[in-house]
Image 1 (cartoon, rainbow, N blue to C red):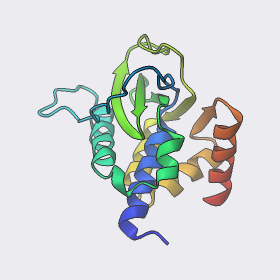
Image 2 (tube, one colour):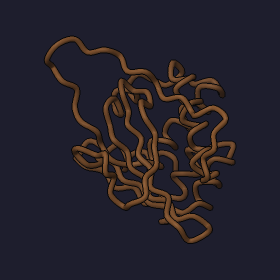
Image 3 (cartoon, helix red, strand yellow):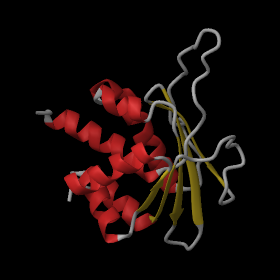
Length: 177
């Protein structure tokens, strides 16, 4: 069984994975593949959006503890592009994308339009929710269970591309019911 620390890191990983969607390209088989630098949250950030700043910090925490994440899950998100659409309490929308590289978060950014202007292939996972749902999961002692509860009650909508991802999502929703 997992230790509490590993379960917490796994929960944060899956929460981040579920809160942001689409897929980013496959790895090239040509030439040497260099390991990408993992994402680091901006220091002394002047980010106007508090939620994005908090998610940025959680993304860096995930990378710093990625050795605690089971290899099978790292492979599941190895090179995914995950896009999130979050309705803020102010009524505005926060659009974000996470680019996974080798099972770690390689990039995490926000943009102004519903479609990511930097995306080349489009997302493989898309997540739609509101700020309250995100904060509830982030503040929870068991963020994964809280996220799955939100998926089951409809306040966190996750769409996946492909049969495998859909099956994993279905299993996750049943397992953490």
